[in-house]
Image (cartoon, rainbow, N blue to C red; front, side):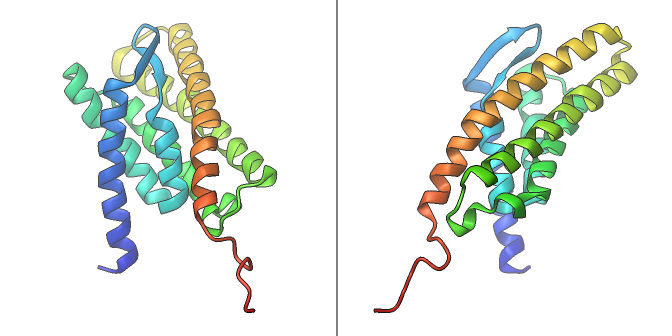
Length: 181
């Protein structure tokens, strides 16, 4: 195993654990089984730092464990959607690479455009289609639930994820900022 893959595995384990803990204990209900989920901001941070593989498995494993522990059953469409959010944000991380100590307006806009598109694909398509196939629920309910959950997660990532990425970027040394005296 290379050092990079060891980091990815460790980050995935820590990220999935945080996903479960934050998801179970910091949960703001909206309607039905839909709530504001602050763990998505942490998943976004890990996806940007450690990449799409870690991002996917943090969401997939974390969501599956959280559902299994909290509800006793797992909604696989929603678990897949959580994984895809981490994958999508991580795939485009070179456009908002905070490891170089920079998260200015251009990176902030790029990050939020990617997360908005990714979240609405995950919750606007994957969740309704999966729930329709598995549970035969009404389309109107599924799309309404997907839209509300998606909007809550877009706002959570836009606010919490942006704050976390900004703070993290400030802890990194900007390339070219050191000079020899």
